[in-house]
Length: 288
Ligand code: ADP
Image (cartoon, rainbow, N blue to C red; front, top):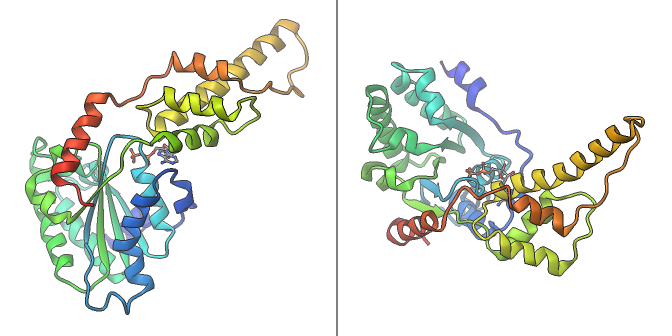
């Protein structure tokens, strides 16, 4: 079992760094405090046990998984478990697998177990038998690492924190809000993802940043693909109309109008109402 798990889940080869997580430096700092610094400065943390259960919550596409990937390149063993896959793959045996998972984590410590979509497991609404058994074993195992000196951390991620039940919430001692990008981050993300030749000036980038207020990093990435596709589509039409050679063509620069027109097609996944709900949940349950 352990061998299968090693192959499936252990993943230390992400090439993501903290710098790739745009606008998330203060969130990254909180993760480093909990997980990285105790490993780099063991003497300073001799009498202090940091949080063993950490929850990243926020709207979808804001970089929670990206942060986890950056953490994975920090030199501790990184076990990446998507809860729905875990349950469906080992239905019936999933609780046994949780034990193996934590044994493996201890053996290869320092280890971070990243549980993406933790709500799928821990939700108050999803209560079928396999999930229930998995869940109770997971809670027991987390209790185990909280009382131990092993450097094993559980990092959960969710877009629907209000679906987590109180037993699980209590195990996530540190709950970190990963919000939508702010004005500056939105402009940085646009520049990052519209990375080719363009005619946009500073004030135009900022104007665009103001027009995509509820966009997540992932929405901005989608928008940028649409923007670049407009230029490509236009070129393909031109080449087909002329009937010229298919190779050796250059694309024109992206303009402000390309982005504005694309905005008419791409809508963000999150509404103001959703944002308010996250903020309220953060007020009640988030850590600072
Ligand atoms: P989440 O886990 O919060 O739902 P992800 O981390 O999977 O979101 O983000 C999806 C994709 O969107 C990422 O792979 C990345 O390309 C882009 N993205 C989202 N947020 C950011 C960000 N803050 N900085 C850079 N890219 C981002």
